Length: 165
Length: 165
DNA sequence: TATTGTTATACTCTATAACTATA
DNA sequence: TATAGTTATAGAGTATAACAATA
Image (cartoon, rainbow over all chains, first blue to last red; front, side, top):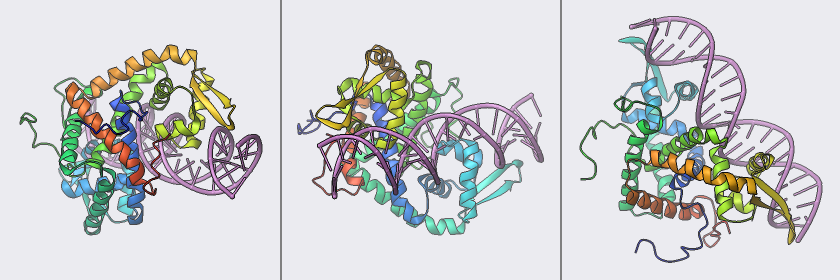
């Protein structure tokens, strides 16, 4: 009763390894995002950065990179591009002048609704096979993996579990 | 009873967008695979190619690329590397001399058990937060998305649904 | 003409190390 | 001494177009 027995046997794939399937689908949706977001002029990376910044006010680059799982050094160029288009702003943190506080700009905010609509549309296409309920279930499973994998995969001592502050 | 209420509220993330979460986790597990498979001397790509070839006898490069979701032009270099290490073999298809039939070699087969063990170990770490049952559920959800997304995301006419033959 | 594999190219992403300014 | 951001660089991965051999 899991899946209808239709051509279930016909599937090749390495169905044993859910990990490779996850990796493959991750690449597939990134590609899908890229084509769907291209008209707006944003890459998937830039899009998720903008959405994250709108959701979580101003943050340090460190924190943003941690949340988006982007290396601090790679984040620089990404933010440079967004800043060049006036979609985000960087300013020194008065409390710790080493930090740059990154925030979404007015122009970024104006764009982000359109961005979110495009992203949601892309997802509706990509996850069309799942009901809204199943999509929620998938999200819950992935979020639990995300939380635990953060500490389980890198060589961190248990107890170091900072969720990106 | 879903997740214990421990620091559940502390999570930032763009929880609305399951797609970005999927993309992010896909990159994360690829990175994890890379470090875990490095001692064996294989990349995640090469690993999944080997596993796929063992599962599905000899196939054309076209078919393999489709299954692994790798562009035909990119597959060439990947197979060159594997062939240079005698892990796979390429030979002309007598029935259609344009085709190269790719197969895993004896040396590849000898290595693949070790490879599979390493991959399984990496997955056990990565998906530690999920029970075996939940992992199966996740796999089913992802496989359904994978099947439908193939035709839904690229501009294909419905009815063109060749599952990589 | 169309398809398979190949080459070349360019662009994105990823990972590492070294530097600077601040703490 | 350690941390935040930056720069430079090298390595994977991705996408496109053009070509040779074959159908």
